[in-house]
Image (cartoon, rainbow, N blue to C red; front, side, top):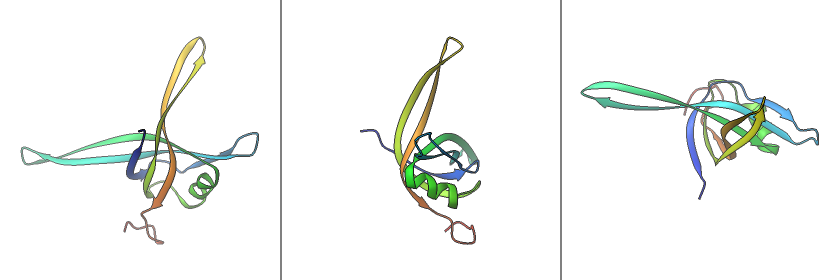
Length: 110
């Protein structure tokens, strides 16, 4: 099974584009932060994830999300490989198929 669930904040505004055939896709970076205590001191680690979505969901993301928005995302990991100047390039993204916005209308977190 290939399933990813994330809750985080957008690090960038979604970049909404269209393929030559007219299919919408959106891309953005998402930050997830883990917090814990070690020896009585607060610790924190932030991970950055590359997010992509397609179709109607991409259009919704492009319209309603912005940098700093908090979201719940479900999707799958996907690695793309291509060649650039004779070198293989790799990128691992989360392809999202379900989203829930966690900010209220005023932009504040629930």
